[in-house]
Length: 158
Image (cartoon, rainbow, N blue to C red; front, side, top):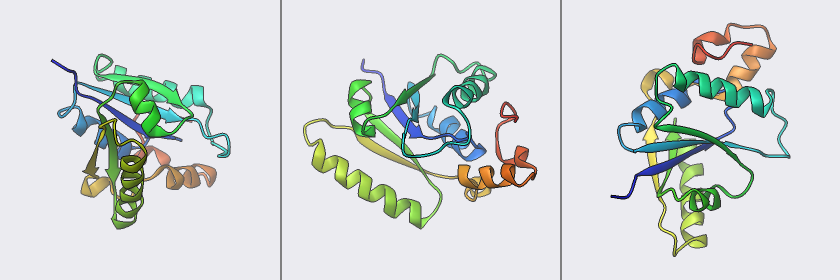
């Protein structure tokens, strides 16, 4: 039996309850989820890769899910990373119509670039109470001294 492996890519700067919600719900669909922290050298992250990885590890170790969740990093095209990791699925969360349009274009581009490698993109809509949360918003709250803790897992503390 082939394992159903999905890659869930992002910067996770920091991981939010929105990310967490998508991963937890997707664990019912896949045998393993690879949380892939993208290294974009053009992007200035607020938190180091080491800190972001540690927060994600703590979040899922706390739930005894370390067998179903793997944390890795990548700096190539996401679809290339999926092929390298032998993942059959690319997991993406959708909060709104703008996310849908953006992700649809990536999906169509991946289909064109990688016709021979069948990697299905699976979209999960954010839960209603998490659909407004994103890392950019959380970083702004942190920068301005607000209470960010209501938007991130309890393992994320500055």
